[in-house]
Length: 366
Image (cartoon, rainbow, N blue to C red; front, top):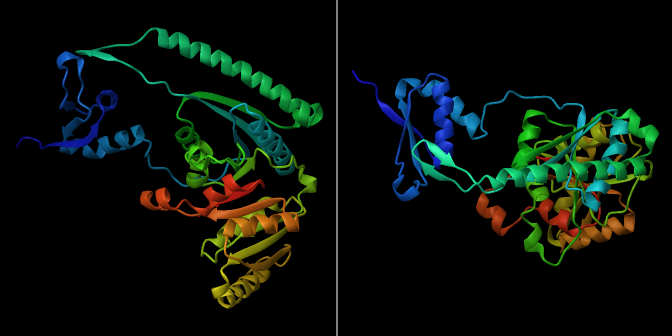
């Protein structure tokens, strides 16, 4: 009986060709359907078809191509990841990360992604014609980035000093791709203890920043992300005394607080769990916060953790007022997964806060 032929993917032509090459390298027979080469046109959706008996071997290859390779749980590696774009706020974030690395006795990895250019190709049977000038452009871009890295590191060296500079193991990675996707992919393969990113300060044009790389990393990263706004004061770690964890009594709060206290252990800080809620439910909120305080006191008897509630109507305004009045150095919270529709119409609190406030923000993945 003849083997059943199945379609395992519907991909753009160039990806379908890559997948076919990968499958054939594994000894899996593969064919493409829906390819239209008339007048140089290629169908947007090309079917990749294989024998059903080869499906078990083929799907891991497909998943790896699409970035969905199955991964075993990995422990955090002893380094801090710093995505850089060579801006002033990126330098500020790097300086903060350097101090944290000194305290935690870990390394630093500077990560820069050169935006992937669009490739314009004309297919002729099995031959693809590329614009030769594109390679020269990419070569020049890479040389420019290496020069920028040297300038960036010289500026950082001036800030941290030669003696401290020698004590930290540092690496730099430059690659071409898509910044958000590549940063997240790297953290999946090599989970850092912390990601430290700079971000441009508050702007009237909120639509321009909501889709930024930083927002995407905050939302999707599975490791803690420390965001340093452009207008945040240049702090040294010895001056960081007060940290606020914003809670809404979510079941994930205790996990986030546990990670927060572990990260802050080398620093002499006071952590306050703060809830800002509407006045109608103030009594219920106070009861829940009291219960939370008991659990925290029992779980972390040696750590300085307090709980506080503020009744208000505007979360961001009330939080900003609290931060200014109490002299808070870092704001921390957890972010939650939302479906695409909810994210579009009702951005998460973490995303709103990072663009609204001028205080460093430490975000944990729920």
